[in-house]
Amino acid sequence: MFIVYFLYSEIGDVYYKGFTTNIETRLQYHLLGKSKFTSRYSDWRLVYSVYFDTKSEALREEKRLKRLNRLSIEKLITK
Image (cartoon, rainbow, N blue to C red):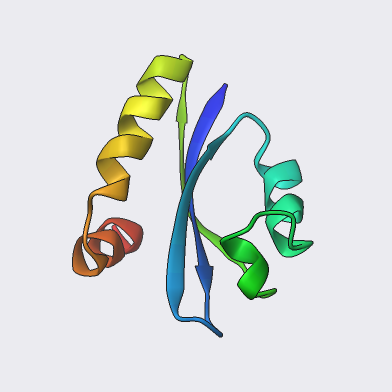
């Protein structure tokens, strides 16, 4: 199973988009500051995730989501 996800930091008021095979482990990775971008904030929370059977599908969706503007991201999350 492959997962595309959004994290949100209220402190930074910023979204982070990513891809993983284990969402719990990946969230801990971000919360512990082990990623350059997400290390700036320590309050990340998972706000969106979608599961795929293949890695290629997940990577294609991650790439598409990374092109979205903030308004589009927020509409997607609230659906």
